[in-house]
Image (spheres, rainbow, N blue to C red):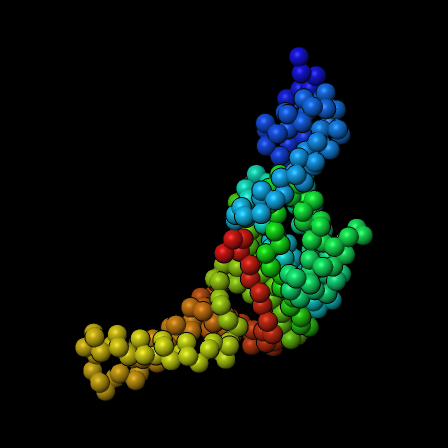
Length: 275
């Protein structure tokens, strides 16, 4: 008869994020000793690391922190939402964020080479995968700097950690407006801060499409220029942050909200898990 209970299985699953059958097998092998079972799960996980290489990591979380005018954000991925909400995965992701902050890394390659607990983070990723029984990956990192930086994390499901993260920096001291715009970015998904960041060829393509569409609709030639520019403005309102209607007051643009506060946007980054 097994010398462990359903509560023991639940506790070990919460510690490791491992599947039900893996936990039961580990407890069987360890004769009910939770610490020995944990070792068994880790060893089994390390042996299976190669098999996990090509597996998809579409779940996970976003972690971010802003302090002293610098914001850092990382996306850490796993295979299932069960592991994404497991305490060991969340703890590991927080360690990844802390390493990103302390190392000053600006790209994933540099971050993976940074030292954590006396070894490269890349090794810690493998060990985390062994413990959790899934492929773990650090997908991306962002660093944003400004006089004021806000870090906003949004949960798309109350049962999961943050799936959307935003960093937004402004050139002045106004945490409230920085936060409000960060929340707006999370909801409205702009691609660029200003029109200047949109590639010229992209703008020309949109202008050509607008002109051809207007012609196909039989719009009068005399009004063509105005129609095209109007549609181009609509295009910018979809993808450019300062041109978007502000989520909290649709009568104003984000740009006007910032101007009223006496600040300008410097930079932003937005991550959504798997997107």
